[in-house]
Length: 308
Ligand SMILES: Cc1cc2nc3c(=O)[nH]c(=O)nc-3n(C[C@H](O)[C@H](O)[C@H](O)COP(=O)(O)OP(=O)(O)OC[C@H]3O[C@@H](n4cnc5c(N)ncnc54)[C@H](O)[C@@H]3O)c2cc1C
Image (cartoon, rainbow, N blue to C red; front, side):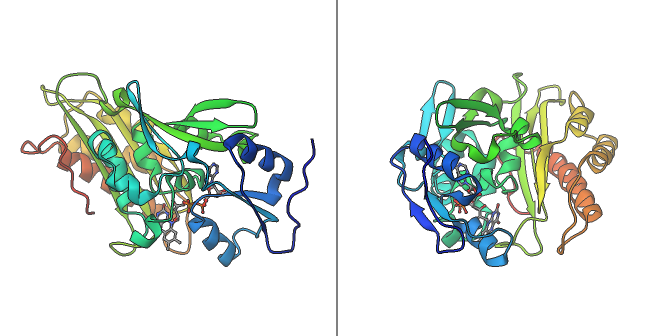
């Protein structure tokens, strides 16, 4: 069935689907002329700056309860894409199980932005500041098309969004509790998130880093995860950097090798705010500093220093 919605060049038509399947149907019929809108905070800046053109139709997702809320599933937390960033920061299950996500989201924009902006819009943008935290938790994305639901690891989607990308609706973000307890051995979980901007707050990230692992009783690290992003770079896990400290004790020598691995592996992009080399060095220093702090002998479980 071919549906006709929206006319290019005019004020966009606002479409209000009744359920996710209808939202997908509208998107499939409109192609690039129909855009999913959640909080609209990112889209608005893109339209105003000319980075994206105003489409013929806006597919308003905000009245779809199936995409909202935070639900406990067996061994996992499923976050609806419509959950506002401010609600995510206040969520007890998120704070208890996934504190790096709460911290990353708390550092996005300002309260007025976080009251409108959604986690789905942040993820779908592919450059949002929440992504590095979600990467170290090995988050899964639940996607919907008109007829089916598909689950994909966030890391895989960021590496290759796939041919059908533009036609999919993000329907959930699954965080497995087993994934949060990285390493599966005795010891304490150590994790941190850092955002570097040109000023302390209310500023786009030059670099974001997130690290997670388990400091075992013999002083070595297990289940190490390291991710970096920021600016227009699509965030990624840094596997070579992870391999440097997996099973190792944090020492000045390990941290030097870790920094070199990050600088060799991370591929940021230059923009008007900072060059790629600066971002690479900053990511290396932040990651090494974070592990140094996390492995300090007097550090307690769950403690992390939010400010860079
Ligand atoms: C002043 C200001 C400061 C900001 N600061 C930051 C910051 O510090 N860090 C940061 O990361 N971002 C920042 N942003 C960008 C933005 O606010 C966030 O990325 C926000 O989370 C986007 O969510 P949204 O609901 O507003 O997305 P929208 O603008 O509604 O959508 C963003 C993109 O996601 C798509 N989309 C939305 N929902 C879905 C879905 N369910 N399925 C598929 N696609 C979907 C849209 O089509 C669009 O392409 C800032 C924006 C402003 C205006």
